[in-house]
Image: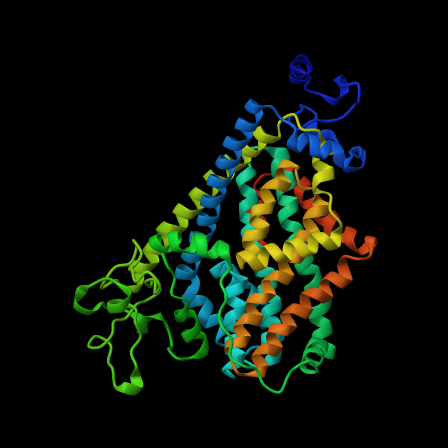
Length: 480
């Protein structure tokens, strides 16, 4: 076996192997097409996965620990990126969402607001709250969530740029990221005019509504519980600012400044606890005031970038610094994660990899939805999967159903938000978001000829990166 491994380590091309199989890390790895990959047995997969000597198991353990380490900080960087975006774009996003607009404007506003705060979950929750408060009509809310569906895919498109150093990886990663964009854009292209003409989503969900909705509780996924506290030690965004501006409670962010902490003590009780106006409590006497950056209610601590007496510009500067820091950390962790995965997969046959990852499309959708419900963010799901597509571990055909599942999973946040409101209109908008995504899946996924449209479009965009690596940033600016 050791002699065979030595011979195998010298071979770097499928042309030199008697079986003609390609192994991960071969010089001609990128030349193999999907239809050229042979079919492995599950016995071969089990052997490649589980049959190792003590030295190999040691390497696998170290590699797994390294991958988990960089994955955690990759997720931390994504969380910090989202917090930074909410600080920098929260005031603008709240202002955008506050206006009752025509359908086209609503669509664009939903996309821009989501791109600004880097979270469709936050946007849809705010939209549901606005509808529940009768600040926005159900019909307007439908167009806003359609736009939010487009805006959510900006994060994994940014992540794909982390593989710019390798042209082949960038091609695959960008294709894996944009297949999500194209599905959302194609769904909007059909369902948006259909909704304007027939209001089918409105009527469908209206027929499903109960007479009343009971109060529910907010649920937070386990990954958020692991990552958010650490990110909150650096920067914690005040989502109430976005909601208050959107609902018209305040006109702009100036109402929250300067930041005021009672007795100069920086903690949640003295800075961020809210006044009870019914009891006659006043800001500066009975409670403090926070702006775009707030303190953590559970721990009672304020983040590192929180400052008593801060102005709006001070918080913007803090958000900008954290944005740069998060992007730097994001790309460093991405490159390190890719490097660890490459080392772990080196020498693995593509037949084995493809067999292990080639799951049924329906199962892929369920997996994508389940992961997103756990992490409470479709951006996290697709952003974590994008590097695997770039490496060639996950084929584009497998990435599509996973992203479709992520689209379904992210609607759960809106449904949970609607349960907090006792207004059935809020539940109707949340249901519209769910059935919009389900309708898009029914149109674009089951029929092979329709499924090929987003896949071919994504592949074309991926190939275009070979001609110019400036395409990804230009694409993000133009689309989002």
